[in-house]
Structure formats: C-alpha cells, structure tokens
Length: 123
Image (tube, rainbow, N blue to C red):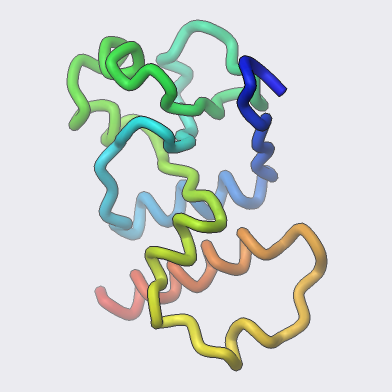
C-alpha cells in the first residue's frame, strides 16, 4: 500500500493493449481516480507503480505537467480498471463471450481485447 492506496499493477500486455485502445480512438476524458501510462516519460517524479504508470490522485498536479487536460489526454494512455472496462462495454458483452475459460489474471486483458474489437468494428 502507498498512502493508503492499493498498488495496482498492470502487465506489459495490458499496457500495450491500452496503448492500442488509445490509437483506435477510445474516447477518454482524464479525471481524478484513473490510472494512466505516460509513454513519453514527461512526468518527472518516479511512479510508485511500475515505470510510466500513474494514478491521477492530484489531478491539477498532472495537468501542470502537460499544460491542460487535453494535452494530458493526448500524451498519455488511459489504463481502465476492470470495473471501468466493464462499464465501457455495458451490455455489449454477452454471456457467451464471458463464459469462455480465462487464465487467472488475464480478465482485464480480455476486456481490453473486447473493447479493441468494438472500436475496430465501428471504424
């Protein structure tokens, strides 16, 4: 725990998929309480998480690094949590999609993959 926060850890594959979601046009407005990946290392203090992963606790502090919320969104990738990813999918996820066996620890990657498929089908 760090300052009472659970230290969420994202796999390299989850970070890669989140970056692909961004490139595919996943709509996102940065807000306090979200995880982000700073792929260009513009945020100078080291992360208490793995390299480049930050939790937007003090939103204004992060906006200061980029100049505006728009620039923050443009220069980072959102790392949706399991709950956020499920919320984005809403009712689009079917029982059949969710009932296939998943290796423990890959549930978030699976949801990111479903989101990526949805975004590609829209284009």
